[in-house]
Image (cartoon, rainbow, N blue to C red):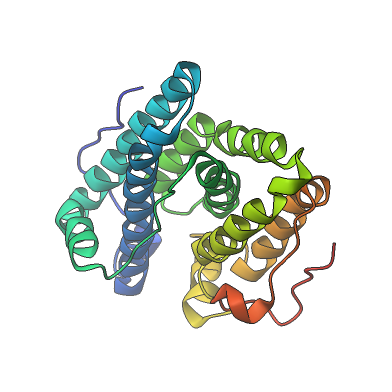
Length: 245
């Protein structure tokens, strides 16, 4: 699908003179653009590990989608008065932020299962965003990426049928769970509460983080995977997060 293009997108009247609102919108777009760019890099780097042509074509289509979504956020950010592509390029070049790259077929499956699934939960927070242009981008992304995490889940389940291979799956799971949880941001932060108050997001991040955790538990049980100790995740979690299987 073609990238969304608009001109002269206005801020809603009630937020037009609120610099904090505009700043928060730009932060959302910065995070989304970085995520889409890194997803494209992740899939592109791992394409050489994909074993069959039919799977290579699926991954190639994912790369195109991620780049289109990246373009959408860059275009919208430009309408707000900034060069988002330059910002993301700088982050990648300087290593200020970094998502790891998968180094084999199983790790790519785990990454898609966790990272893409976390992205879906995170984006659903903005489906009815008070900044309507971003809500439209979110709806497009959710529609087009609906099957991504299902693809990764299938790869992980198939691999874990051989119980001898489960320790390797557990290793990758431990690494990617922390990376994926970072998608939700810090729970119960001042910025988080503000975004909910002004309708930029629908719920607090900690609540959705638990929903994500609950959603991956059935696959974990089927594959014999366990949650690593909280301190190994390197992520700020809600105090009452439930990691019981």
